[in-house]
Amino acid sequence: MDTLTYFRTDTITIEKERLRVQIKRIHDTLRISAECQADTVRIFKEVEVPGPVVYRPRAWYERILLPVAFLAFVLMFGRFIFDRFANIR
Image 1 (cartoon, rainbow, N blue to C red):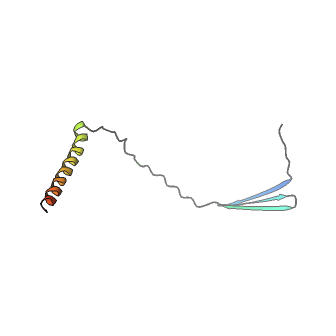
Image 2 (cartoon, one colour):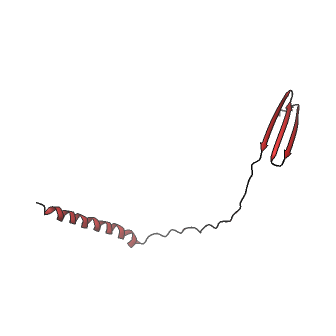
Image 3 (cartoon, helix red, strand yellow):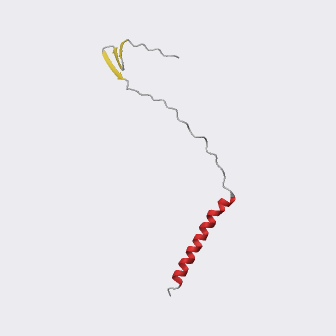
């Protein structure tokens, strides 16, 4: 079922440049609403987006080189510390 409502209103709308004033008379009440539209500056600029990044899996020697270098560094550092403090006695 549809509902139909009827309001007895008079509306006056005044527009000038960026200002819009709306005056509504509803029975014995006046409602005034005003809206001042903002100054909008729109700038359109085209920007080139770089192409997609293609993922290339690392080669086997690249995956092994870093852990081997780290292990060698730890062993050399451990040997240095051991030799340094072994002769203190």
